[in-house]
Image 1 (spheres, rainbow, N blue to C red):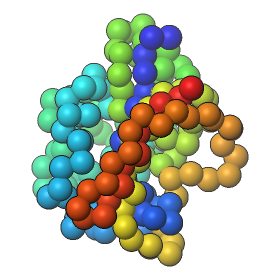
Image 2: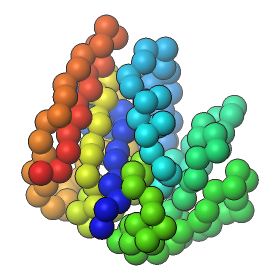
Image 3: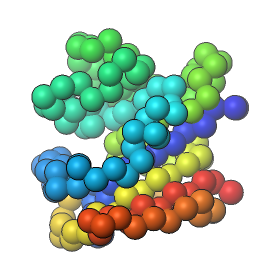
Image 4: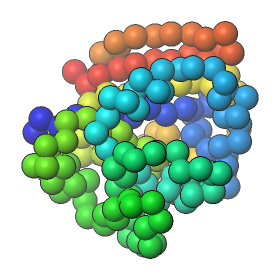
Length: 171
């Protein structure tokens, strides 16, 4: 496959991407600092997001993805409200379909979804923004049961807010 799957995500220092209730309010103080998300987003063909992420962004004042193609992976498909597509099959089947359609770089978002693509060996790039907070509990980015994955560090940056960004690619 020629398609590449990329993750761009924020995680607390203790490894959580959201509070136990799914809230990402702890990220608000860091929104005014540019971490390269705009350039990353401009370089993708589409997004594949999990149902939890989808439900979260539906609560935002504006749809954050503009006109980008969005595919929501869910076994409980709701009606689409912004032209998004629903998918309930396995990650590899979706990857093969998107590859056949000519997509070259796809953004993956959502903890369960990212772990599913990691289990299938489909994640090619990881950009992890470590937020200088310890939440103590929440929804983890990584859990046990993931396969070994050797990574090559592409870049490490620190920002005035204390955020540290690590960019890796699969070896």
